[in-house]
Image 1 (cartoon, rainbow, N blue to C red):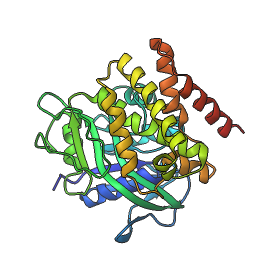
Image 2: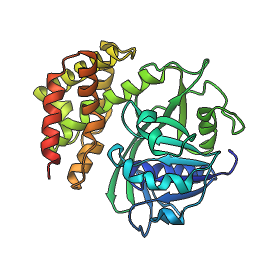
Image 3: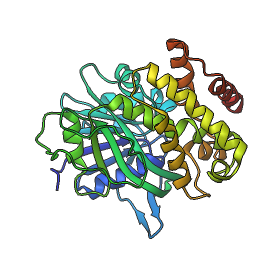
Amino acid sequence: MATRTRVAVIGAGAVGTVVAAAAVDAGHDVVVCARRPLDRLIVERADSVREIDVPVLTDPGEAGEVDWVLLATKAQDAAGAAAWFGPLTGPNTTVVVLQNGVDHAERIGPLVPRGTRVLPALVYVAAESLGSGHVLHRMGARITVPGGPGTADAGTRSAFDEPAPVAVRASSRATDPADRFAALLTGSWLHVERVADFPTAAWRKLLTNVGANPVTSLTMKRMSVIQHEPAVRELTRALLDEAIAVGRAAGARLSDADREHTLNIYDGFAEDDGTSMLYDRIAGRATEHELITGAVVRLGEQHGVPVPLNRAILALMHGVNHK
């Protein structure tokens, strides 16, 4: 089992609660940092319901320095979580950014104390908040982080229920933050995969979001709408094609095979599964469209790649989120 260390999880939503449970399973001292008090933290799966016994802090003034900060808020809430970074981070702290998008380090780096190590991470966990502190973990058990030579290729292994191959033995005594993070979760059910071409892996993760998330959010339907409604499926395919063109212009090694692979991932979901943006709309929360569809539109403009469909979807998401 990995060496017992101090871990703070910022964000008590679906991903944060699931990751906190994994850190507890790995044998670490875990604290959850949340915006409001929670009576209980519960992770429900198909075969179990479990309460996670960890402290929940709501005041950054109550926090102390930890070895690891796992940032699991929605991307648009990162700035609001910045007050936690000062009390939690020290010279040996690593901040792991468990968020969507393709610019993790660039987005979070300015918010943390100077010199703090920031590790980007792609989360393949499908979970839904059923209520305050109550999360349904539907599927997925993988986190992808950058790796050096000898680690896995980014490949097209993006299925949420696929365990990561172990290419390099993880060690808590390693100096590379990605290797140490892999060791941190040893002993839990959550696998950490290191890939040599992280930018391509990040774009492949973005593809899993750029079609399903806005489409389910705007239609207020679950994955069945993409799986079984032909017109919606063709729109989803076209959104993916635009994103692939932008990703290739930005340097990611994407091809048409990535579109088909992403559609296969969508088909692998249960018909009543949803997406994080759909769950946010149902709960009346703001959606993270700017870090998903917005990223495609902004980088399309930067690289001269037309993205009319993603631009239209972004405009509609702005309308949905208008107050």
